[in-house]
Length: 341
Image (tube, rainbow, N blue to C red; front, side, top):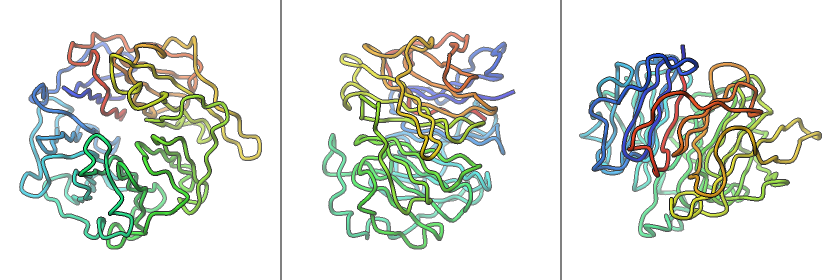
């Protein structure tokens, strides 16, 4: 019975038994932050009742009862702006948080205490990092832990760099010239830890050698402001991607137009991107960009938009809307996080 944690900019909601949501939608206790801005969310199947949610101006929050109640954690250490959070797939007590200004923090006790991983902004490229809406600063948009190596982290700075560490943050590698500059999300299938997928504002990217080199298969991808990426749990070659023509079209409700694409990568027989139409999930004019997540079984993936939560069990061939009533706090709001555990 999978649990879904879903975040808009204004609230976190929890669906229990997401395949058959007979328990309906449960508000996330105290974490209905209508006066704040939610930035990120994560949880893990190894500790399903525990979830983390970062906000732009109220720090990091944690639930230990499946979203019933929330508490702020790391208040003495973490900045108020927590822009990414990731639970390690190797140990549910190891959690990483990225912040604005750009920094990475680690907890080894499930979020009780935190320490900063030093040296990130000492890298040569740091002077060029900048977030266009706030050009005097930048932030960590995504942290991905290599499922084959707990000490190997990918860290995306918005905007300016995709960085790596192979020793859990003791040292950082300088930005590779072959990576994207504006990575938003990443996905790695546990069966193929060397294959990395990245959705970026400057296009899609992938690596088949654990981040050493990158390629940019764009064939068929007509909209190249990419936001979210997910991999079919049963097929590491099947990739789902959300994209728009520009940041404005992705994020602004007045001019929104976003799309879903799918691609199958089998080496020399890799397919072109196919735009998903007539699959019973809203896309196109008026729809804000989707946040995607892998499910817990083969063929299962999820897409969260301002129109609701949609589930496919055939790898994106068709979707059904999860039958719960989404509140006003999700309407005309960009989705900020999605975890299926």
